[in-house]
Amino acid sequence: MERILVIGGARALGAAVARRAARDGYDVIVGARDLTAADALAGEIGATAVQVDLQDESTLAAAAHRLRDGVDHIVTTGSAPHDVRAVDLDRDRLLAAFTAKVVGPMLVAKHFAPILRPTGSMVLFSGVVGWRPGPGSLVKGVTNGAVEFAARHLAADLAPVRVNALSPGVVDSGAWDRLGDKKTALLGRSAEATFVKRHGESEDVVEAVMWLLRAGFVSGETIHIEGGARHRSS
Ligand SMILES: NC(=O)c1ccc[n+]([C@@H]2O[C@H](COP(=O)([O-])OP(=O)(O)OC[C@H]3O[C@@H](n4cnc5c(N)ncnc54)[C@H](OP(=O)(O)O)[C@@H]3O)[C@@H](O)[C@H]2O)c1
Image (cartoon, rainbow, N blue to C red; front, side):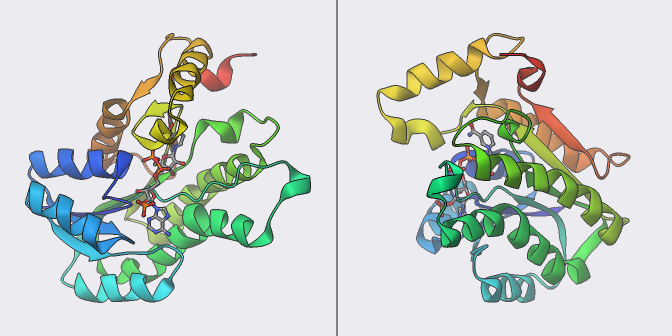
């Protein structure tokens, strides 16, 4: 049975991946900074919970030690958005955003490389904003762009372990529920900005993750799951 660690696995897309992986017969480890939430989901789907905080390297080292008998796949969904214009940048939040998406996954590679099985893979998370610049999307855009290069260079570094990134468009993953009434408008606008005239569903992304886990001849790539949104001119 292949073992998969899903970081950010207690919520939204991470939880959707963990649920599907458990259904598909993987040995799932739900990694989250909130161990109570990870435990709750793990109990529900027959998985194991482990504390993983991408902002705290000691938790990465501890998780790798706990799982030292081997891991096949790691999916890391962490993000720490800081959606402001350049003049409003807060240095700590800027660094936290890079740590969640880029530095953290690189440190995950550091601690898990010795225990990742050679036929395994890592899946990082980018996002369409990396290819659609706009006011207020500076940090999200640059971190998402950096994820593409992180996947490419980690693929060379960790080979033969495969490393890829997924770049979703706007997906109704639960992350946007915090917008309340404004969520519907956001999803509508984002649907208009695609070729396929709909927003993304968690299952669109989960399908791509599950394919990447098995795609033995794919490494160093960023796969775009966004209905063509980055190709639209408006
Ligand atoms: N949903 C979309 O429309 C969309 C679009 C483009 C790209 N993406 C990308 O897809 C990924 C998943 O997004 P999502 O929709 O599931 O919502 P999200 O709210 O961005 O999910 C982020 C996940 O990362 C976890 N996380 C944050 N900081 C962490 C840390 N320091 N250590 C470990 N985990 C941490 C969160 O857990 P907590 O519960 O602890 O906060 C949550 O599980 C993100 O990278 C996001 O940028 C999503």
